[in-house]
Amino acid sequence: MRDVYKRQPSRRTVLASIATTAAVATGGFESDPSGVTAPSLESGIVPADRHDCSDVERPEPDRTDSADTLESLPYPAPPSKANAGGDRSPAAGSRSSAVYGVSRYVTEFERAYRRNAFLARYGSLARTVTLHRTAYRTAPIDPAGTGDAVLVAIRYNLTKGTRQSFADQRTEWDVRVVYYFDERILLRARYNGVAEELSFDPDPRTHGTLVACVD
Image 1: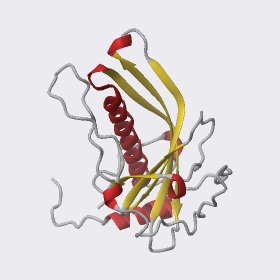
Image 2: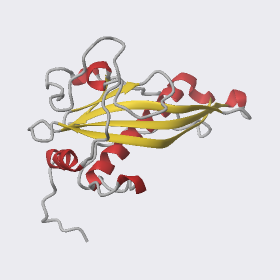
Image 3: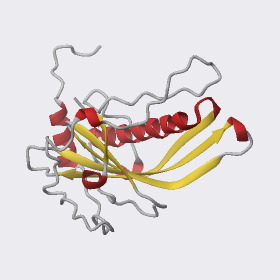
């Protein structure tokens, strides 16, 4: 039975754990063809007044009561101490459960995002949408400061099909998206091309869309 008297850590505590335990892979940002200089990982916290929660933009398909229609997916709740675990990977080494929680949150958010976008486009014709993550990478931002945040890049394959082509499914291979997550907002940016390797380009802090407000 859960100890109801034990105080759960705040989201800031969870993020601080991410920042102090996540290992940053060698390398960095790829060159930005737009010429805009992205903030460094040491000082790249997005200012609180940069985004307005009324500007959240993400697919929200219309609800339907038809049993034959593919259901939309709810967008997941942000990670906390209670739901941070459960995303274990043999390649992850000794990283804390908070790191796995954020990468899982981002993956589930992207799964809902792509499925809902497909439903918004095809409606009752949508037959299947399956996302399989093949790799991910995390990087803490400003681990010694007060504005804790993290970048998460994921790569995945997406298989889609409609009722118009029952025997034919199409797969997008090696799709890469990058998310910025802090205690206030979630930003999303997609790489336009096939991602052979993971990196944090495009940088969602300068080229991303506000897709969720955490609080």
